[in-house]
Image (cartoon, rainbow, N blue to C red):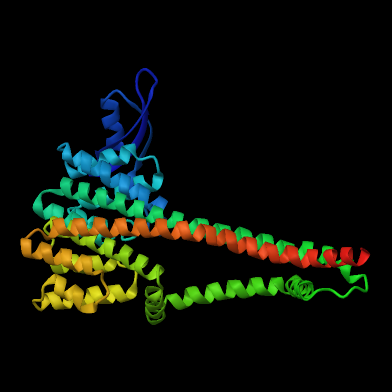
Length: 402
């Protein structure tokens, strides 16, 4: 049977929308007439999905995926079967892309494919971690609990991403605005002001002459500098696609005093949270490590996870395998060791993930509290130099007049 989305009116003239299963559109219209409804539009959700996707792989946003997972777990917890829960989600979804994606997944289920295989067909929306957890939930019969934990994981990951965005966007915005203001002063304002001094025979101070030279240089070279900046960004993006260059760049980032520990803590939190969810859902440790390595951003840490997977496969304990690389925080390794010895690895991983997330939040707050006044002082220093370079000739003229 195929799912059809319909618009119909009842005997009182009220418009009704919904989803029903039928072998054909004619049978769907007949089923609506049997319910006392007059069909206005009946369309196959599978055909609608093909039209919406148009050859492109659909992608859900992080917020949409979190909301979908939360609603799905609630419906399953209420005892609604997976297929009917998908139909309910299709009906209440407002975005056409989400409806089409869920309809395509539901069609795969009706064709006899397991849910995790249906989700794996859309990797841009459902990553390997999501599919592995769904597979574990299907095998254990606790898909509702697994999806609830997955929704919690997506919420915490979204909150961590939001903190990072807030910490990065503000400094970048301040730097951009300050650079634009200084560039406008140097290119347009300074030449008009210092032209008054240049018309006279007065010997200008060294600072003023340097400012005039810099202003003249920026006035004719700013298009070249803009093109050069775009070229550097483009070249850097292309270079980062190469794993060797990206590994070297990440190693340099990890050596930075504040940034390195912050990025390491963020990746450690992602890894610990992923392993906690997978281990708590009954996923084998080797499979959990493979999925955990996929969520790690820093290439050296990802290499360490891959080597740890090899060591665990050969019989090593997880904490010893992770400690071997020497790249993960010692507290994380000690908490994993405690979890392995006590048989409560998933609980200790949860605590380790929370501890690393708290450390990230504290470090971001500290960095922001230091960076904001430094940016203000830096901008003030640049403006002060420009003002002094303009005021020095005026002060000298006043002294000569006296």
